[in-house]
Amino acid sequence: MEGRYDEVRDRLYSSRNPVVLTGAGVSAESGVPTFRGEDGLWRNFRAEELATPGAFARDPLLVWEWYDWRRQRISQVKPNPSHIAIAQMGTRHKNLTLITQNVDGLHTLAGSKDVLELHGNIWRLRCTECGKVVENREVPLKLLPRCVCGGLQRPDVVWFGEAIPGDVLSECIERIERSDFFLVAGTSGVVQPAASFAGMAKRAGAFLVEVNTDETPLSYMMDVRFSGRAGEVLPDLA
Image (cartoon, rainbow, N blue to C red; front, side, top):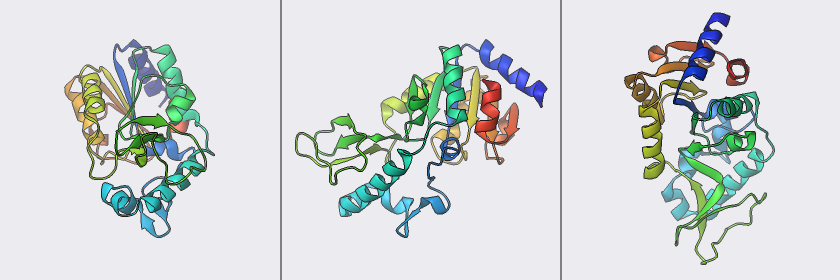
């Protein structure tokens, strides 16, 4: 396996436009609750029942109580070795693009720059009236939060049934379509549109690498696959 590490390192640092895509598995190693499994259960509600525009319209207090609980849990965790390794890759390779499906902000906390957050950020609030976005790290958060205009604020995250912001998605696609190295770590490979990114990179001629404890629907197209935790594999690549 060490020979493959050498190969991937060489590919990474000789690439002109490397892209890294991370999913929930990366943050789970820090202790961040995931949507799937028992971690996704809160007061007998599933995440899919709360992270929707309809749920917020019906009962904004209930949705904000859940997000406040998530914010409190995330505030207690720190970036793990995989976050730090990716930040180190970015320091060594100025053209590296990091795309994440995670909303916890741990990549930025670890020192990564140029992070494209597909699903938003739990530490930002967006006004439902004027659309103004502000950073807010209050823990616990005063519910229900209001904008300076008086409008009710919501988490600046992408909910089920909502589209990825067009500017973010188009930027991701542009970076991927000119990538020559594509590393995907800790993602299930089933949530769109991120699940289609590896195929885009493959068609662009990129060298594909996957890091995951389990095989995913993306595994078959990889040039190299490391079976293991991102926090164990990525430091060796960085």
